[in-house]
Image (spheres, rainbow, N blue to C red):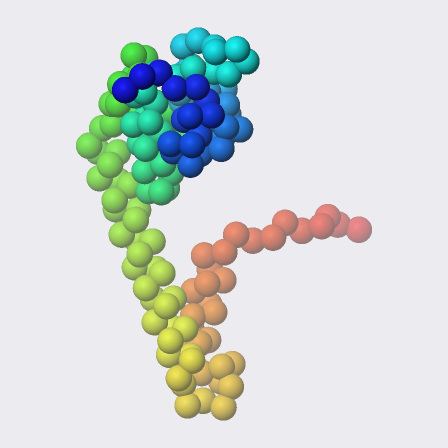
Length: 140
């Protein structure tokens, strides 16, 4: 495969050129020259962008993902990091499954209103305990 300019990379990957420029600013990818005003990338950038997309889908931040590439640009992901992220995903899946089950129950609950359903009440408490607290507007 031959070198690709930024428009070609955007077309092949579906990633907007603005995002590609941002990734380059962050050091996640690197162009090696220019063709007119367009940045030119090695074809390996497509694989790197796939890894970035996978990392984001798994919940890694761009900083985390940047740390997964060595100085030579090669992938260097510790198995411990992958295992820890898999554990995080398991916890998230468990939490979301409980929320789903509670909502399904509330949808079919014979109680007069959702607010009278003990399961729905527990669901609200769980959701409230996991939500970030709003900041107070300040004291008067």
